[in-house]
Picture 1: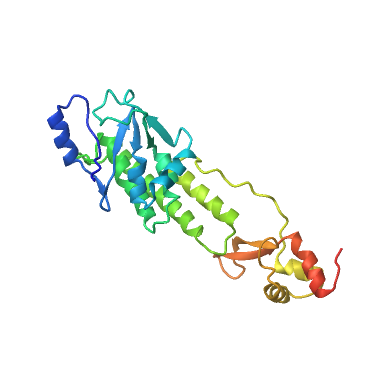
Picture 2: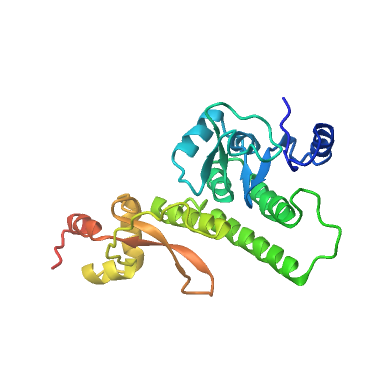
Length: 271
């Protein structure tokens, strides 16, 4: 089964268009992706993107159902009648915007999903926006072109850093969702995955708990480990600056819910 990247104009003859499509066929790791530019907006076939990301057709459909109009657009034959494009299904077909592509990327568990975002940001979009096709411009890049590409590369690297942090096992699910949301915002240039609602809870360090009960912070940690108190809902890991270096580290903080547990274990009541 072949998927073609459809690029061209209505002024081309049928034979010229077919030859042009074959010449401009773009492949990501063996998968051909259908892309078109309509009224200045680059749109992607969601199921071809899904194949690149190892997502099933049902997973892609589910993701599209949760996207807004800035992320997924339904095209009909009437909307594409003025461009040289294949005939669409009678009821129309959904296509992804750049934001929609990035949102779909975050649904993938494929190890090299980041490589796909690099391909989109570094090769596909700059080429289409400069020339209307995937053929890179022959002329020397202007300083503005180079600056734009450098900025896109920087956004991609920053988003990758957020996503790598989100894979840290010790982080709370809330913190992971925050990092994923920020990564998508950096890539797309706008918020596309809402930040989770964060309940503000008072947090205590092991030293704080130790002061309450007249014991050392180390003993607090030992008791917490012995009685499995370093679990929700007694606290969570948070990213904080290390006391011994300039690096950040994951530090466990306790919530009010842990105090009655220490009172029970130590036989001491605190005010």
